[in-house]
Image (cartoon, rainbow, N blue to C red; front, side, top):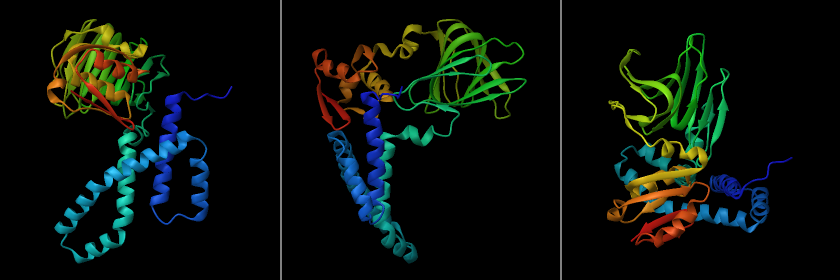
Length: 326
């Protein structure tokens, strides 16, 4: 039976196709056949036309800062040969840069995740069964590589968040490396999150040992977690274990986001991990207000629509983007 796209999958596919068409039509003089094929694509449905109009709108918004940047670079440039090259290439480069910026705004995961052994897109989740029987649950925008040999099983969590259910193998330790922090399973189930060189390790069952790696590759001082504990880490530090909300830490496995007594800005930052069109807070004071949130990740817009009933906020939408102000 053929796969039936969900509405979010259809929107994402059309956005990808619209970006590709915009790049194709603005990177040079399009031929008549290209224009005919484009018009046929655009005329398939109102959704196709809307997707392309959105990309055109974003391109126009990006043009102003791009022109300012080109002007600054021209003033700074002293080489007449480079100036001549810029004059010849400027129009094409501007269009390419604008489309690239648009594409990266919507699809940063396509740039960073595609070369990993396993990866998910923004808003996606996946389950991976390894050869040893271990199971990995990948959350949104996650990428990892797997190495297995006779002496070790090692997962390199490159970005994102994953829950690990580790198969017992006394002869081969199971280790998850995130930057220079390594989590070693001692027969267990745990979650590791790693975003922008910082992260958190939460133990759900069993035991894990977390340690920093020295430049030589040797393990430094380690901490051992008990169930219901977590540690945070960054490039330099590894915290002591602390109590964790286990249910909230793994709620994404159930398609939920649960956050209690946290600033609104933190909730918005978390939601943005699951949305291509980002949510922006326009009021810094409002962002500091503590709230409780239980959000269905499959229907974030319903939570946004209900927010003015509990907080003094106004919701404004601009295409895929959402702005929250007081």
